[in-house]
Image 1: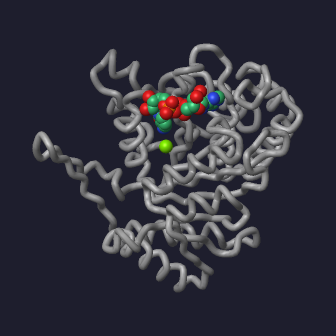
Image 2 (image 1 turned 180 degrees about the vertical axis):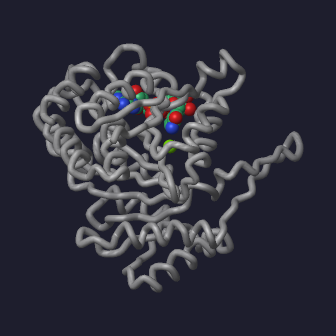
Length: 325
Ligand code: NAI
Ligand code: MG
């Protein structure tokens, strides 16, 4: 059977790393890619950053691989997450042998709420002096995330999860989030502990081995996972998956990197690891493991791109990964 996968390169280095991830996927499974547009360039041309056709493709495909969008990122990625009905954003942050990391012992997975919190779009300008934002937290979305988290940690690898929140201040919203997640964990006999998200930021820098799987509200997950990227050696390494009930969207955590775009030197790792998450999601576990192993070997032995201290191009690093497969 040929797998059909929608790919949306977007802008900047998205256009450079997505073709490389496609080559890797093509080398391990029988696949047909359906190309779609989104981002700044499409907006310039057509007036909309996310054409209806692209939304519809993501909303009907089993899996979509997305690069990055520039200034229009929020107009692209938030509706795309909605198109796949994603209620959780999975963001592993792992240090690799051979990569210079601030904390080489880091091995974390963030499970970020993906539909609400302060990213639900309820912002208002009430006067020349005053703007407000409504923070949305529902028990149902919190429980859906918690149920996913319980399932995620059910293997031998993990011993429960940690909730990072700020329920001591945002008593109503984060209180609801915390209570819902704790109660689902208890129902499933999953060990759960809690940490205030600001304290988490300090503790994870000092000793990331205190944590394993971290469940958090939307904004906290966005910020804390980028912080973890700093611990493991940069944004070029972090993949992510936006998972819904029936479909999913995979994307590197990084953006369009305008400072290096167009030079063919972007690190393809984050996007290739996102593709590996996609392969696992689609049931190609062996192929997914093979890609992860090949990436790990190349990160360890080179060639590496400039952000990792090497001088390989995006294509040379990908060639090495494919040679390993
Ligand atoms: P960024 O992630 O694009 O870049 C931050 C820094 O990390 C830059 O120095 C960049 O060169 C480096 N970097 C990122 N990915 C890299 C890679 N694969 N290889 C080597 N170096 C890499 O974040 P920034 O600069 O805050 O945003 C740039 C643009 O990207 C903005 O227009 C923003 O809106 C957009 N953006 C889009 C996202 C998305 O589409 N999901 C996510 C984050 C930002
Ligand atoms: Mg972010």
